[in-house]
Amino acid sequence: MSDSKDVDRVWKLMEKIGVCMMASKDGDKIRSRPMGARPNKAHNVIYFLTDVRGHKDEEIHGDHHVCLSFAEPAEGKFLTISGEARVLNDRELIRELWDTAAEAWWSGPNDPVVRAIRVTPHEAQFWEGPHGIVATFGMAVAAATSAPPLLGEHRKVDLD
Image (cartoon, rainbow, N blue to C red; front, side, top):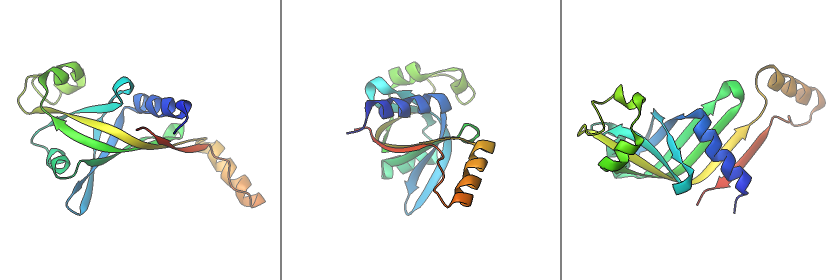
């Protein structure tokens, strides 16, 4: 069982970073693409809007395991989520998720090609620590003292 503070931290990182690379399987290949995440901690799901004509939808139908990678390198924040995805044609949900960013891609929430992807997260890993000059200094000190660098925190978090 994971510490509730770590679970909260995972959800806050998702909300803060917002965009992730969603990796899915296409046969024996793994493909990634940027996606705008809509995390919903209360329901333990992460939603995305997608186009039914996209390859990721076909890939999810073939193998529902996905990995979401969030990164904000300038702030030393990294997060991965492993989970299971489903493509949904739920018009009410799509309307709830609709925002101005979606309008750049589709004519509206009733556009027949819009779908929602629901990811149920099972496990997360995050890394947070100093970056830039502070990280470089920490690495130099570690090299000079033969001690491992103290560059922040890393945790595995169970989200089931």
